[in-house]
Structures are given as structure tokens and as C-alpha cells.
Amino acid sequence: MRWLQVGVGVLSFMVMTGCPSEFGREGRIAKAVHQDVQENLVITRCSEERKKEVCEGPQRNPKECRKCGG
Image 1 (cartoon, rainbow, N blue to C red):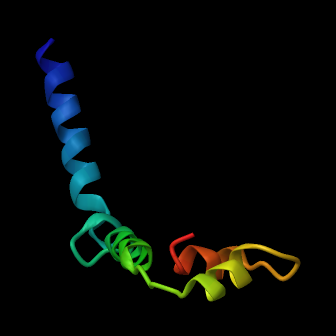
Image 2: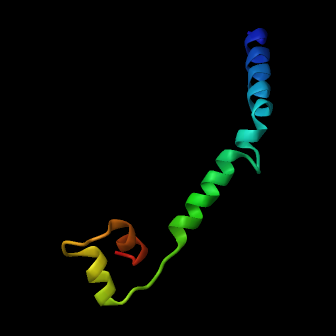
Image 3: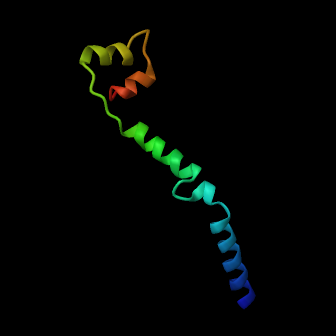
């Protein structure tokens, strides 16, 4: 039983310290999450005419519609 606890401890230590470039504060995953949050928190207010233009009709643009809050 003691060997199982030691094995799990050693394995978790290796995993936690083995990939600082991925999971650290300046790692790729942290940077990607930060970028996603920044992109999703931007709320732009558009006029009703602009909102109808990008959210409805034949020339609708879903990306622009999301930027306008639609």
C-alpha cells in the first residue's frame, strides 16, 4: 500500500514539473486562455441598422453579428 502512495506521489511530481512551458503562468495554455477571454469580453454596441445589416439578410456575417452583440 505504501508503494502505491509513493508511486502516485512521484508520478504527480513528474507531471507537475515536467511541462512548465505548457502549464506555467507564461505557458502556451495560459496565453491561449487569456487570448480567448480577451476576444470574448469585447462588447461593441452597434446601431440597429448595422445590427440588421450584419445579422439578417442575404449578406449576413455571423462574426460581425457577434461583435455587435447579436
